[in-house]
Amino acid sequence: MKIRFILVLGILIIGILVTSQSCVSDPSVVIYDYELTPSVFMPGDSGTLKLTITNAETTNTVSKTTVSGPSTTVSTDTVGAIFTKIWLVSASDKNDKLIKSTIDYKDAGELAPAASFEVTFDITAENGIIEDLYFPNVKINLESYTDVSFPIPIKVSNTSVDIIPKSVPSKISLSGETELTLNIVNNRENSVEGVSVIAEEIEGIDYISNNVFIGTLDSDSSEEASFSVVSQNIGNYNLSFKVEYKNGDNFHNTELSIPIEITQNYDVAPVIYSFPKTITKGETGDIRLEVYNAKTESISGVLVIPSSDISVSPSKYFIGSMDPDDVFSASFDIDTTELDIGKNYTVDFKVSFKQGNSYYETESVGSTFSVLKISEKQGTNPLIYLLIFVVFIILIYILIRFFKKRRISK
Image 1: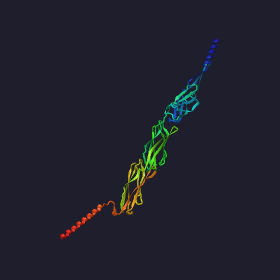
Image 2: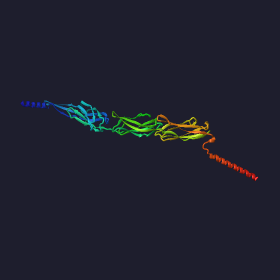
Image 3: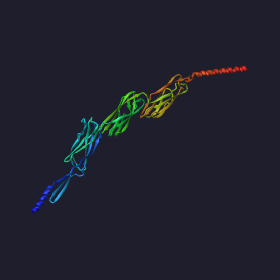
């Protein structure tokens, strides 16, 4: 009896000793992924850092074993990782300019095994920070478990989006439009958005459109922006262009100034190469012109228009379209039947053409002619009259000699 009591007592004591034994497995909390916007900062930029935090344990349990008499009971409870604080430790350059965030998360809750959640930090790269690669640390404090420290690489670069002249003449004429072409180049390691190129307004210079929208520009890529310029006055000007773009949600711009001269030379114009100085009354005079297009782009609707008080045929000479460096000839006739002898007459010519959606006219060029009597026809050499007179005298002499011989022979 005494031995049996001792055995039962021993079993009870052992049961009491192991009644509340437990075994805990720490959760493996990791930063599974992160996303920076913008992916590369510029000094003064603000952006965001979005973290995906994961409890990598597929199971995380606490086991509890209870012994009561001859029976043993084991129970398990699932336990998550409890977050007490999440924050970002700033990184600085040698001048103490920071990559920083002013946000932290306290008592962020519990994360079950195999579960994830996201947190977002507002990030600022202070003005004047040196371009470099920085590693601010994400810190995670966990209740009863090992804390987490994870460096995030954040790059700061001064590289910008540049404007490079591609096709910009040093001189622009007063006639029509002149097209200027610029290259917009993204030298950055990340894409930029909302790219637009703006031509600044200048007195004496007009643009058909002063804003070219490009949109998104990928890293190390370029796009062209073209502007049609119409000049009003001759002189020297500085054309100013600005490219605006967004790095993340941060606005930036780059400016370019181009010196240019406005001249009175016309790159579309008529040139008279045959115009009579005199025309004999009743005859027709022939006028010939050449029209050239010295522009770098095509023009259309090209029309040569004579202007005079007298009748010129045709009243208009239609050429149509002209490519760059094209030359076309046009001819006109003047009828002098109704014109006054001895009077001077002037005929002017101008060219109208279309470029883009606008119409233009050149300055007029012209020349003057006079009307002569038939006997005053230009180009008759006085020596011809002398030669005719000499021939006439010779003929008279020959006739006289001929008749004298006939009389003698009779």
